[in-house]
Amino acid sequence: MKGTSKTAHAASSPLIPAVLAPPEVLTQAPQGFIPPPLNPTGARLETTELAPGVYGLLSSKPPVDNSGFVVGEHGVLVIDAHINGAMARLIQTAVRQVTSKPILYVVNTNYHGDHTFGNYAFPQQTLIVAQQKTAERMRDFEREKQFLLPTVDNDPTVFGDVRLRLPDLVIDEYLELDLGGRAVELYHFGHGNTPGDTVVFVPEARIAWAGNLIVGDGSIPFLIEGGAGAYLETMAKFTHTLEVGTIIPGHGLLTSGAILGRYLPYLSELIESVRKAIRAGQNLDEAIATTPLGQQYTRDTAGSDSPLVAQFAAFRAGVHRWNVWRTYQGMKGDPTSIQHLTRGLSLASVEV
Image (cartoon, rainbow, N blue to C red):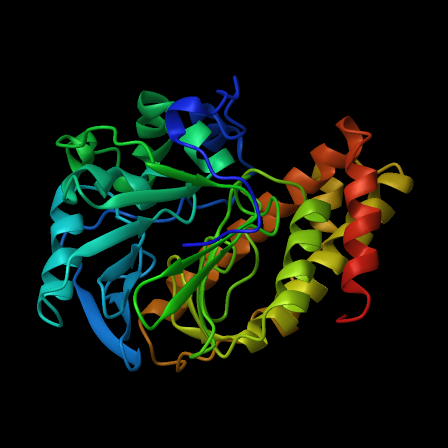
């Protein structure tokens, strides 16, 4: 195990006092926003071998969370623990159908409960790994339950069995984990969907788990907590640092590194459109109306006969309205957001 940045135990990390996306934020969302349906009832995790020893666990009920695992000579690394004990046990069953080697690590790609609530159901000897900001925000356990309620049909029994389990190993920007003959790299490129978004990368296979940074094939970025400028800067760093072939998203359909060519221009155009609306003196409703979702971002690769297409299109349209809302708020109320916008546009200019 080696890293270019300092690591620490979760217990020694300072607690950040405020969660950026409090539960009530979903009730303040613009009209047309649809909370992602994350209730796992009836969902299966289908094992797909993406490369020798590298497996995606893809939800049969998107956008219910995906997962995955990597097998080395010494043991296994799992990506994300899911939303409750039952789903965490499905992950472990999938691992056991492939190997009897111990699960050495579970990496949480962000702090939200649908990625972390299953931590407690893994063996105690398994090390939970997360980025520092992720570890800090995981402490606000009860608030996270309230935040997730609208996404699980307001049914608190979905995570009624859950107990808080914090990370054992906290990283900053980079960590390499040696599974025995196979290295797995963890990267934190900056604030995107959440403050501590972590990419899990298997370099020899060019396969990455991107968590909520990439929602899935046919998707657009989801600015659930951050600003468009910071997200753009993060995605530009991602693009410039890694040459990715396959991406397992946090929630949607399997995709490829080519989706970065969709995310970067979307964020750039969002920033420019909202900035233009504010300069023209438009209020929020007017800004939303004059910032439509471009046709180039609504072309789905799933067949038009897929029953998921209409549902996904409505969700994506709602996410776009959310993104305009968050970007407008940031530009109007946070002078520092201009710095992020400038840096993000500069970094992305090579790609867009």
